[in-house]
Each structure stands twice: as C-alpha cells, then as structure tokens.
Image (cartoon, rainbow, N blue to C red; front, top):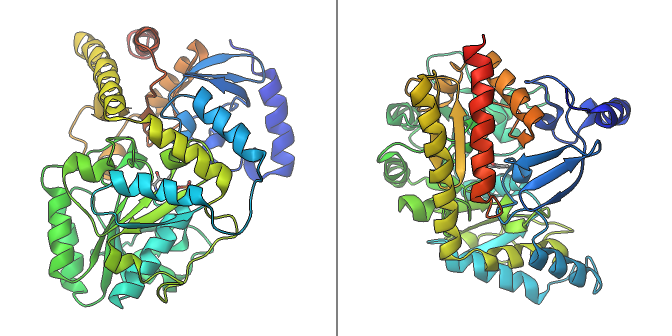
Length: 431
Ligand SMILES: *Cc1c(COP(=O)(O)O)cnc(C)c1O
C-alpha cells in the first residue's frame, strides 16, 4: 500500500476548518472513497504529494495545465510581473494582448470581457443573452456543467417536459423555472422545449464537447442543429468553452466542429493555471455590456495582471503544431488502451477529442449523461485506486475527462498504458 499518512493527517485537519476539507467538492474523493493526496509540488507531467508519492498527472488542474506544470516561460513571466504590482484596479496593456490572442484564435469572437473564473463567465454570458434578447429562459443540457451559478444548478424536472428543478438547496424555484433542460445529442428534446416556449428562450448554453460527463463528443450535425434552431427562434447559441477552448483545437470546439456560436465562455487554459475566465462574442452582442451598454458586469480583480500574464504566455506557446502533437498523443494513448480492451474483450469503451479523453466502464453507445449513468461505478472506483497506487492520477470520477499535456512524453504514455493493463487485469481477471 502506498503511504498517504501525511495526506490523511492534513485531510483530517482540513475537514475541521474547510467544508469537507476541500475548496471544490470533487477533490474530496467522495465518489471513489479514500484519502485525497495533498499536493506539494508539480513539474511537467508529474505531481508529488506531501508523502512524496509521485504521479503522472491526467487531471492537469482539470484542464488548464496543457503545457504541463511549471513551464519555464510561464513561471518566469509570472515571477517577473509580480515585481511590478499584483493588482491595480485600472486598465493595463496586457489585457489588450490577451484579448487579442483570444480574438485572433476563436471564430466569430470579436470582443471579450475578462472575469475571474469559468463560473463568472457563464453567469455573465446568460445575463447578456437575456439582456440582448429581452427574454428570460435558457436551455441547458443534463450533464453539462457550467460552473456553480444558480441558473445552472438545475436538474431535469420529474414531469414529461423540461421545467427544471433546483438540484441544490439554496437555488430558488423562481430561478429554476427559467432554466429548461434538454438532453445532449437529442435534437427532439430541444425542439420540444422551443415549441413549448417559442417566445421565451434567450439562449441555449452547451458544452460543445460534453467534458463534464467524461468526454462525450457532439454527434454529427448536433451543433449545427442547435445553431439553426436558436436562430429560428431569435435565441442566442452560447458555447461554454471553459474546458474545450484552446484545448481541443487552437480555436476550440467552434473551430474543431466548424460551428460558430453567438457567445462564448472561456476559462481554464486561458489562465495557464491562474484564476481567470472570459466571455466574448460578436460586436453587436458584446457592446451591450457595461460601460458600453447597459448589461451590468464588473470585477475588482478582473483582468488581473498576474493571471493575464500567465494566460498570454500559455496561449503564445500553443501553436498549430502544439495541437497536432496533443492530438497525436491522444491518438497514441487511446489506440494502445483500445487494443488492451479488445484483446481481453473488457466491457469498456473510450471517447476522445484531441487531448481530452474518457474510459467508460460501459461498452454500449454513449451519447449523453443518461448513458454514462449506466457505467459500472464500482469497477471504475477500483480502477481509479489501482492507478493511483501505481502512480497514475486520473480524475476521481467516471464523470470527469482526462487531460494530456505537451509534457506527457511517449515514454510516460507507454508507462500509463502498462499500468492501465495491470489495473484492468486486477479488476476483471482476478475478480
Ligand atoms: C470548469 C468549467 C466551468 C466552471 O469554471 P470555474 O473556473 O470552475 O468556475 C464552467 N464550464 C465548463 C464547461 C467547465 O468545464
């Protein structure tokens, strides 16, 4: 057994001071059980915990660390910028540089506003969609995560149709009634909502790759369908690219699938590991944001020079070639895992878009979160702990994606494949 004694001690201490001992729920390992390693440091594709266990990291801070940890250019730029001040509450030239880098890469994104997290970006984007269209309701998809704003903490209602219900105490019924729920990759479920509320829908928000159910790509034509139906009803299409932006392609999922939404939200990669978010879209829509327009949105630390610097350096390092390398790494890892699955005929399946991937403990068609719910979670949990013991850190939930970084060498991918092989053998063969 691996030694997690320091982490265990820290987890107990943290639990007395911080709810669940963590500052974001999934870190607590609630679904897989056990002690979450407390991390001391990271470098490249590796992280080390307080007991000096070393792991190949496929969480990558849940997406941002696409270059690998502590990339020297990013680290040096952060160190340097800190010396000239950490926050001013006044505009800086760096914010223009980051805005330009985003606008140059993302199709149809003509103006951006920087915020401090993905959650802020999605909250602001739906306010803007409502302000722009003068309508109140939004459609979201079951299984798509858009941060912890009230309007998104909504589950499908029990009725045959679509009225949402709060899925957290503290979210009011009033808020829930303005969020309508459809099924990812299910156009009929979207049509039904539009037909029921033809005048009321301000926008549809979607993860263009549903990365908060593992990694479910949009099926052929689904994103085009969303764009068409939104425009048919004078609603806005919002791509939540907090995870996919600058990850699945240089211009994100919009470039990858060649569908341009009206509004975008970003986060994760654009901060290079520092807290940041952004939302953007066409001139016409973005000029409704204060102070140019009347839709209010603000932030004391928005455009923070340290976060912006980390973002600038990260995006500058991500060239067209970077994405072809990331994709090759994704192909390499998934093909090798696929041959293990096929040789042994394991009841598993994989999904992958570029360097985002998921291994599902289920071997039938996976189109949305309802399908992921059919996975063998006990087997996943054993697999997770078995990999952790072997020094491979994947997300502690079947509903989370894995992320490959540019620092994951072929040698590390090979080592990962061998650990996957023996973890699967211990679950299926010895069981
Ligand atoms: C992570 C994530 C968010 C929330 O971003 P935070 O920075 O955690 O607030 C929103 N949308 C998607 C698609 C995400 O993956």
